[in-house]
Structure formats: structure tokens, C-alpha cells
Length: 303
Length: 303
Image (cartoon, rainbow over the protein chains, first blue to last red):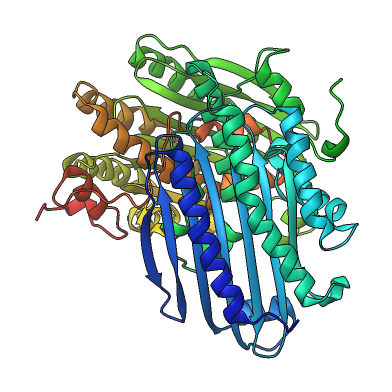
């Protein structure tokens, strides 16, 4: 099979955005995506789609394909001469209305230079306001299946990377139950470009499976003000992660990207409560206790 | 008059915290400050006081006095050898319940090393959800009076510094109507230490005057959901500034400070709305149009 071309990859990412938006509208039942097309003066552009629905309180499904001369600073970071580059990807964050449904994030991206460098990056991670350990195990099993396309070691490596990346250092808390995170994936991994691409497509395709399950398992659960309050406090942590640590957000803020697309990941109603400590043994306290790195979710046994 | 000693300065800052807390409790009418005393393992500690009142929805008045060996990285930044240092200060952020009352921030601080270096820093800035240009002029007139204690140029210099510092680059918006900001103020300014200290005390003392006026002028105004929504969107910008740019917050997050004290500045109920654009000519749009650097508030004439 010939190497997949940039055009193929861009086409597939656009199709992924379309499929995901169609399915999410159907899942929500009433919300519709609003699209903003944008053009980048230096080259390329994107389609930002945002839904504010009945069940998906705020969600963004973004596609972009940009190109141009690489800024000096980025070339320096890569230890190469500035060259013409292409970058394309799909990026998703969904904030559900029901606190029992987790926040989900997915990103798949591809980068190449005229000088012949290329790599893929991406990941999926799940941020439950309330952790259900069985659901966490099932999600990680799905991630394991996806990673096995690349190699038998990939899941362990990318799961650990997600634990370290999606981490609020200042809180000593993971953002949620993690998932997978990878970057600069290319032939140096030992896999061919076609295998890397098949893996990235599987990551993209797994999004709807994972989210649909999580949504249906939790969205009919009833909740009250106390659950919403906790959801809003957890959303505050999501803001802290995205503004303080998230590479995509920081890169976007520093490079004068389209601000509303970069910050579409910001939650709706959020709050900060001074020194909030959940009641011992409460569901909230149990969730906090599970926001730790290196939990073996595949084989998790509740204590 | 002899140079004011570290002990004098610490004592005065503690007294300032006490006076401000007493007055704010009286202004609020029902809320009481909750105090958390904390000790820093490496030396010193502080008194974090937080109020969640009827009118001050969330406010923090923090005092700290820490000391110890200067971290290598900080010494390097100052181009000195690591030495024993003392740092003390008072820091305040108040988020009012009524959207017509502005958010206010004040900070005064003092730093000295065993090797004989010393300086003061601080500032006050006001972040109205709705800008009243007369109130902005009066606030800046007060800042001018305070700065005149130091020198006739100080206000222009520190007002400009605040415009540049309290600025969300990624939004191309000032945080509010600014105020004054200064750092590394010492004898190199041409003023004696006693004059610098008198100026810093005047900054501290001006806080209650400024806030009491702003509170009484606005707190009896009625508001509805639309005003609260706008307030929450503006609070989102406050979060963006504090997590992305604020030096104190970033320093605290990087140096493993007491996280609840560092993030006491985070607002209560906040929201992010995708691509929110106020109706042309609305009060919200007029406020946005005034979130610009270099407005001459002292001599402002509405157009």
C-alpha cells in the first residue's frame, strides 16, 4: 500500500469531523453545531464547530489544516532550518450538562515539512466529575485495543504519557482517568507510516464508541444542585490545566491563533470555592482519591 | 527619621490586613473572614483570610512574611549570589456579588536580602464589569494623589506600567480600567527609603477609600440575569489573566506555594460562552470599547 499523502490525511480528518458532528447532534437530540470557517493569513485555515445543546452543554469539534513557513523559534526547537510546513488535525472537547457524564477530549494531528520530516500526534482522555471504576476499565480496554494496532508496548507507553501530561502539578491531581497521549510518532517508532496512520485513524474512530457508551451509561442518572456544584468545581480544575499546562492552548495563545477556537475547550458554568474539601467517604472524596498517576485501570479491582 | 526596619514593615502590613478585614466585614454586613494560618517549611508563613459574604461574594485578604535561602534560579534572575532573603506583603482580590460593583485588586510587598538589597512593589487595579467613566476618573485621581508622594512623574509611569501589565494579550483587552503597578522600587528611583515606604503605605491606605466609594456608589443598583451573565463572562477573563500572565500566580504555582492562598483570586461562578459578542451600543459593548491601554482617565471626556 502506498504511503498516505497529506491530501488523504486532510480528507480523512475532515470526514472524521463531519461524522462526529452528525453523531453528536443525534446523541444530543436538539443541539446543532454552529460552524465558523476561518482563514489563516499565513496559509490554510479551519472549520470550528460548536454545539450548545440539551445534553452536551458546550462542545467543540475543530478541524484545521494550516501551512506556511515555520517560525524561527519552532525550527530552533526542532533543531532544523526553517522550512515550509503543513499541520492538520481534529480536536474535540465536550462538556456535558449531566454531572454523571464525563468530560471528554480527543485530538489527532499530522505534521510534515517540505524537507521530508513527518509525524503524528494525539490522544484521548476522559475527565469524569464522578469516577466509575468499571467504566474507567472499559475505556482503557478500548484504548489498549487501539494501541495494539501500533505495537504491544504502545498502550503502556501512551497511557503513562497521558498520566504525566494531563496532570495539574500544583494540585498534585490528574485531570481525570487519563487515557492515551502520543507525539512525534513516525518511522523511528519501528512502525511504517501506514501502520502509524492506521493507528491514528483508529484513535479518531474510537472517539464516538467511547463517548456514546459513557453518555448512554450515565446521562439518564438524576442529579441535584450538590452534584452540579461539584461538576463546576471540577470544571475549574479543567480550566487550570488548559490555561497553565496544555501545550496546544499555550501555543495558540503565544502565536496569535484564533482565540475563540483555542478557548472553545473552556467550560460553561464553572466555579472556584476556597479550600473545598469533600466530606470523607463521599462520592466526591472517592473520586479525588482516584485522581492519581499510574493506576492500572486495565486490571483495576476496587478495594 | 531612621530607616524603617523589616520588623516595622511586617508589623504595619499585619495591621493593614487587620484594618481592611474589619472594614470589609462592616461593609458586607454579614460575612465574616475565615482565617487559615500557614507555615512555610523553608521559613516564615502567613495568614490567609477569605470572606464569602452577602455582598462580597468571594474575597481574600492575604498577609505573608517568608524568609530563607533564595532559590538558585531567582538569584540568577537577579544576577546575584544566592543569599538569605525576606519577603513580606499584603495581597487582596474582591469579587462582589452585584455586577455593578467592580472587582478590585491591591498588593503591597517588600523584599530584602542579607546582602543589603531591598525594594518595594505593588499596585492597585480596578476591573469593572461595567465601566462608569466618572468613577474611573475619580479612582485615577486618587492614584495620582498617592503617587505624588513619591514624585510628580510616578503616576504617569506606574499608570502606564499597569496598562501594560494587566493586559490579556490574547484578547487584546486590558483587564479593567487599570490603576498603578510598580516593582523594584528603591533608592535608585531618587527617593529615600522613607519616602518609598510612605508611598507604599499610602497605596495600602488608599485601598479602603477607593473600594468603599466604589461599593457605595454601585451596590444598591438593581441587576438581572443578563447582568450576572456578563459578570460571569468578565470573571472568565479575570481567570485567563491570572492563570496565563499574573506573575504572583505563576511564581506560586512553580514554587509549590500554598495553592488555596495563591488561587484565592479565582472568582466564584464564572462562565465561558463561545464567541460572545455584545449587542452594538449596549452597556456591555461600551465597556469592551474602553478596555484599552493608554486612556487618559485623569482627563477623560466622554465622546
